[in-house]
Image: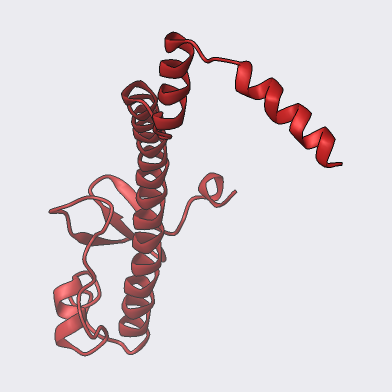
Length: 147
């Protein structure tokens, strides 16, 4: 075994590493591991694109949620108006959200979520009642919108 090791040592002593090979070995040893600037730019760009897609989808979900909140609030207003009407109050009471609040049928006047700056309005007919925001009817909810 000792003879075998001596033989290997003598072979490797005779091998000389050229200067170019030595510089290449040193470069490989000192080469830092990490990401290049181009790789980082590509990753940041992809993250930006994905976040904008998520933001667009999220804003659509918020719009639907605001409209659903308005449908629920319109239902509450309609229930308060029907209670006022059943109690025999004047027509003037159940056609105004302010008067429904004054007469304790509503704790507060709900704010419109889907259209900023608008207010709920109550329209009464013979036996029907509609709660609207602008031209859009929120109560009763139309059949085609319930699907």
